[in-house]
Length: 493
Image (tube, rainbow, N blue to C red):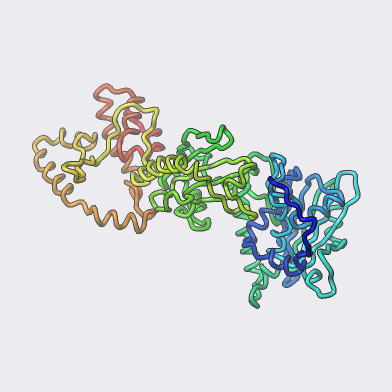
């Protein structure tokens, strides 16, 4: 870049007043969840293995205290960390660094409180502490960007008892317990705390799952919440996709239909913000830390039938500029050059997710050979769709063979059923109440389902089929395929 010469040019210091600038930094749009996550990021960078977070209610003296067992800081390091813009976003960073702008500690803290204090201790060293107090900085008597060498005695004692670590305290929580003259209650304060806990369960789930980090929230260990339900056997992973010479990794998952999940797992997803419909989309991570959750990045819009589709994108920390990652680490936008590939992946995933959703969670097991026996057949003729009952379905075929004298009457009855299926009403109800549609035999006693399966099994046994083959055929026959647990215990005698 060409060097400009300003030696003969008149100059004037235009540094902003500290008070007004610090007040402005409060309004970058941090939620309490995002602000808390920024403090945890600093602990991770300091190689902490455990982070303690405590929401402490005491009316207008309520506070939030963070403590970690990381490497701690010398006094010079802490003073530098307290400076706004302590790090250039263009600077080369450690691969494990979750920051970028050198603003996170300050902007995150001040977005929630008017005073924050940091106490830190290196191993085998004495501790150090410094404080930002907005009321002091904005006072007419205060000059410049002034931090204070003061901390609460109780907070100092919490760090003194540790070999090393850092404590951050937020006091005068005006953005949480008092906003626009409205004072909030203890119940509201702890509702905010619960929302924060659920947020960090997701944002740091990969750290929590592997044991790299423990987070103790109000004395209770935080459990990881995996958006991809990788621990469920019915979750369908896609092959990993590699972009940008291996630096960006993408892996898609189709989650199980409700009929394949324990009800508690389904409810846990439904109770998260926005529920199942809102949780679909891309999940963008940098160094295993979730930046952006459940967003289709403008590639498509959220639809109820896509609710089972979730796609993980892993980024290194040297593509922040290209992906437009913001200070709050809550926004990311892919470069235009990658959008066609991301769109192709997304369309492939949502297409399959929609098929699983519409077929009520049916997944044909890859280990089984032969044709799957559906009760209904989809037929296309002259560009129009309609459905017919599959007369080769084992149950229907058995009935027709056992009652040859009634075959024509049975076929007439089936024809009436085919021609009067209330398709529009079914579609309307499924679109309006997609999770309230009963699956086949959902309200039927197990003994009745077993009776139907046993009738088929006994007939197949008489034809000379082995128990293993009978089991495989039942697993390939709708609707018995949804009741594998009953098939496993079935007596074919």
